[in-house]
Figure 1 (cartoon, helix red, strand yellow):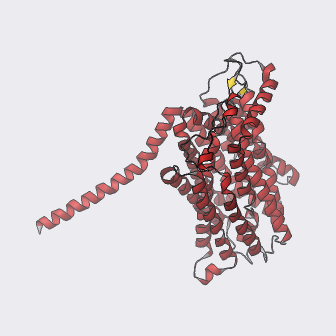
Figure 2 (tube, one colour; figure 1 turned 180 degrees about the vertical axis):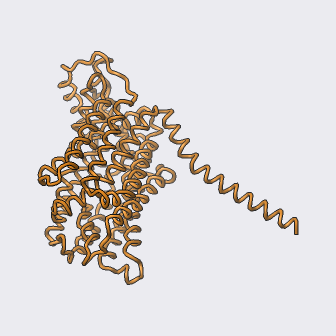
Figure 3 (cartoon, rainbow, N blue to C red; figure 1 turned 45 degrees about the horizontal axis):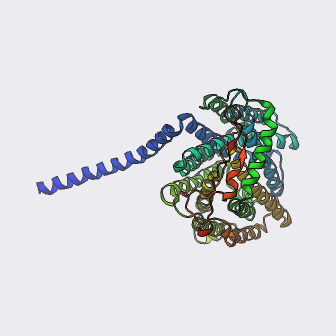
Length: 498
């Protein structure tokens, strides 16, 4: 009996040690990973990614997203189709990201190519949010201008940190996927935190009060501008700026003409544009007391926060299990899953979940989580590919150009979704045809599967290099060093793998 009790005690101790070991490992691995990235690329770069992606776009984006929805619905009192169109308008600064990228690449300020643009972005965002928070009866046009200016502040900070990521992806090619994972991880955790408190803050201080809180992320972006480790360019001649613009434009055009560049870009645009965005219609239905579940402000925020866990899981799953898979193979399954997951929205608007005894709240959390996870999994490999297509010297501009293609797709999706909501007569109080809008959206989500031949079938660890004839392209960016900086070809022929 004593031996049995001793063996049971040993097993319990081993079980406790095993649990402690896994808990310790869960904390140690991310910390070790952050330390490795900080050591390889300087801590200020990692801080910049965390602030821009985690706090500005993650926490700030979540607060702004929920706050703007209630601002348009309760303060400006617009229809869901109009709100969908206005959401597209405020995203226009993201479409002109190549302009911000070109400025950061060829127009240094006081000898720095990145730091001043972080400072400007933070000041612009803070000013716009203060205007929205202090004026209670702001005209719709002025409100849209302020929201667009705030969006521009976030976009400029985004393109500047993207330039840093693209530059480090070139100098540390083996860490390219890790850097995209850092961006995705920061964004997902930030969104989780932001959505967790967004509904509470909207309830306590209203959407205008939430806009006031958004000055804090903008202030942290300013701080990044002061702390970022960046070498100062000496003896830069601003008389060469015009020529730099011309050379950078030529370099971008040379790169973009490559079949192995424009084909993935075309797929990215079509994949986004064909996924109709009807989120505003769904939001109005979620909060409707007659036809919808009548979710409260706190419930909306909590639903989005739990769904952002799906985005975080998608980033973790890609980093530890899927990052070495071929682009085309991974995109096939994620696009298919993305299309099929949209059918869950059809189930809830037809109230079929209640027939199976599943509460609306639980079902919506599940649906949003699956949707966010598939979106994250779908675009992580394309972000890695995009970062490797960027020519050295204009990496900020070209990465911004690739991302602006995505944003044009998002704008097309948003305006097309608003058009569908308008045609189907879905209003603030009438949702009879929302099931048809969902069905149309879901069918269109599947169509990009027919276009996967545009994506190269190579794994993310392979460089995708430009055709041989473009190797001779040159671009004059850094006048202090040389008159010409070779346009590094990052894309090699993948015809054998396609």
